[in-house]
Image 1: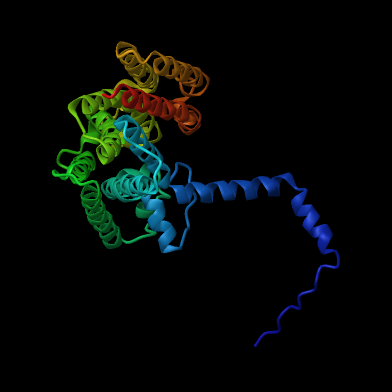
Image 2: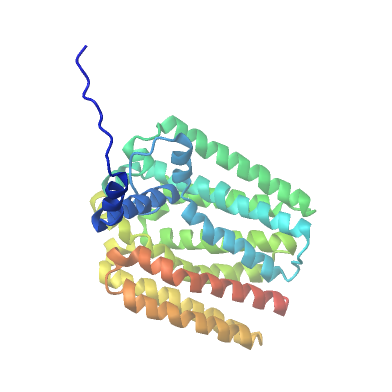
Length: 348
């Protein structure tokens, strides 16, 4: 057995610690590591690789950052019903509906998409759990089925809880899971077409959770469905933002996303015009039903989105896509709530 080298304690441990604390490079590296790990856990662009905890990997696959718009859509739907009141039962209903829309159905959708996108992710985001080999494919398939079955079960429970004669929420869950499948899986794979794929994604983020929240507390009617489908055209623009991060892989594999079809600059303009114009149309509709105050608030929320589009997105959509979403999307989702409150107030 070879002799081991004795370890000599540092006589000045505080000085050694100070050298790390006061070293800007070390601080920057530690901050970057924390940021990368956070991005990894949330399923964001620019994540780190090397996670070994299977539960963290499963959570990363579900991309928690993508749950937020759908959870918010449930809130907007509850507001548009005009029947929500602050009781313990209603709070629990909304919480269960958020669980359905976010972790279960959106989680199912994200993992399904990653499963069918594993070749393109190997080009664009090789640190993702599936292309990096962090989780075996059979385990991915099991997780997809668990989330889907749990989602259907919770949707039916919410229908029973709400005394629905027709299982509206279950039907919405089935429709949503079907759209998710044809969006990601061949032979249809809607995401291969920039227009169809982006609108399917936009409708999934706005129409489906909004309709679910509305049905939870009121009668879902054709006016709400049509309005939210129209609002989803603004969501189409948000969906296009997500295409810029994968433009190189899309081009190599022949996927016709809008940045591939029209080029980066033109696609960026299509994106921002779609986001702004269709929110403007919704504001005009609110004026037509005499909800002028809500329409004014919505217009005021569109203005900072336009400003941030000019500051970040239009200048470099590939580099600034995440920064733009983080800064501008809060105004868009607040506008959705304003619209929901207006519809509830008007009794639509």
